[in-house]
Amino acid sequence: MKLLVTGGCGFIGANFIRYWLEKYPQDNITNLDKLTYAANPENLMGLKAENYFMVSGDVSDSALVDKLVSENDMIINFAAETHVDNSIVSSRDFVVSNVLGVHSLLEAVRKYKKRFHQVSTDEVFGSLKLDESERFNETTRYNPKNPYSATKACADHLVNAYYNTYDIPVTISNCGNNYGRYQNKEKFIPKVILNALNDVPIPVYGSGINIRDWIYVEDHCSALESILIKGKVGETYMIGTGYEKRNIDIVKEILKRLGKPESLIQFVRDRPGHDLRYATDASKIRRELGWTPSYTFEQGLDQTIKWYRNTVK
Ligand SMILES: NC(=O)c1ccc[n+]([C@@H]2O[C@H](COP(=O)([O-])OP(=O)(O)OC[C@H]3O[C@@H](n4cnc5c(N)ncnc54)[C@H](O)[C@@H]3O)[C@@H](O)[C@H]2O)c1
Image 1: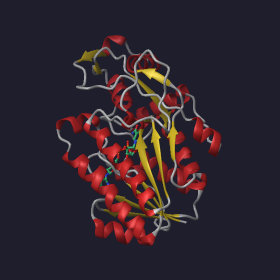
Image 2: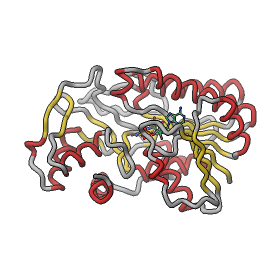
Image 3: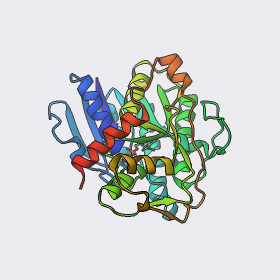
């Protein structure tokens, strides 16, 4: 099998490439990445040139994408601008990479009829109330609330529209918040760990009551593997664990594990339009594809703290 992985120098893409090549060393992976500030090619250091190949380029470059899609059997798209705060400051790059990029991939996929998977987020469904028990599922109405999630929603709609119109072999997954090795320092859990290790104040938006559904990145990779191998074409799958945590509780948990004082917590002005709660109902992927997460939140957190402590300064 020849896989084209886009955005493989980022957090989840790098974990996915390592996960896949460890399990399927006979396969070949081509990684197309624009090498934005969020990319770190060192995440993939040590992979063998005989089955891993890196191409520096943009998913919105139709000619390049056409060539790479034609040469591979399966395409999995991680490439995106991903930081919500950046999308609030300026969203043009988000539209280009997250929407036009997916469009150029879909055009090539349509031409060559290749298997395509779009890695999406639960943020496309907007915000749940803090005090309700409802969770997002595959029939939840799209209702994105910030420029990042709007571009991801647009991409999902394009994928579904191409399936409906051109009958191409596509799937989509909407996953909750990931944590684990290789995540950019700008993101919540790495920032908390690194600030705590360096005794630097830890900024927490608002009063820290926002809730996210957290998944250890390796569990996301195994869910994507299940979809690529067993998923039904044209379907969407929610990916999540049900480990719903308030931001403030995560900060306190990390501080406790590192033996650092809660006085490092510094509440800052809330993010504009900050979604209150995300929660995914992953019963479809569990029931139909037999996927289950392998890590509890605490096990994943221990692994993550260990990695940042040993690897990142
Ligand atoms: N991180 C999460 O918690 C999470 C949750 C659900 C879904 N997702 C989705 O998973 C995917 C990967 O997320 P991540 O956290 O690993 O992101 P990331 O920001 O760590 O990495 C994104 C990668 O995409 C590359 N990239 C950006 N624009 C590109 C372009 N135009 N052409 C080629 N490469 C480009 C970057 O250089 C980077 O290597 C994204 O699509 C994101 O929406 C992320």
